[in-house]
Image (cartoon, rainbow, N blue to C red; front, top):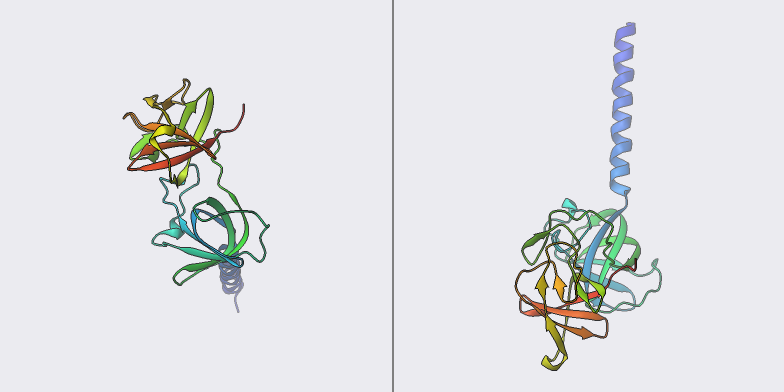
Length: 209
């Protein structure tokens, strides 16, 4: 066997080995998804993944295209208190298993908390592109739009005002940055609710400076 032919065989073997290693790493890499809890019991959680426009600061993950529901076991997760309707971030490993719902091997989960420090240029909320987190200022405090979590039972008597528009980060009471239309807002137990798209949407307190 010539030296050149031997080198070619060795090179092909090395390339094949690298391909196998890279493929294995891709299958077992950790991924994350943000979703709203739609089913919850002592053993299993089912979420509806939020679209890229609603994820607010979570990079778009094309592997989630077409997936409407994802289920995972709570066996290996921290015992956190969540309820149906909460928005959570779930980290998982291995492949997404086909089914209805699809299943993943979750390794951790946490309440979804948008960050004021992240670059959100191009994010859309209620069909409007913004360059900051979707937020409203109420009584000198900044509240962030909490994904697509909605609030039930908000009465007209609890409404404390209507919003004005600030396309940047709100600086004055009543300013919101995701709609130029006036939106009623009210205090709730968990923060502030803002009415748009025919629903009350929850906004939670932002990070303290």
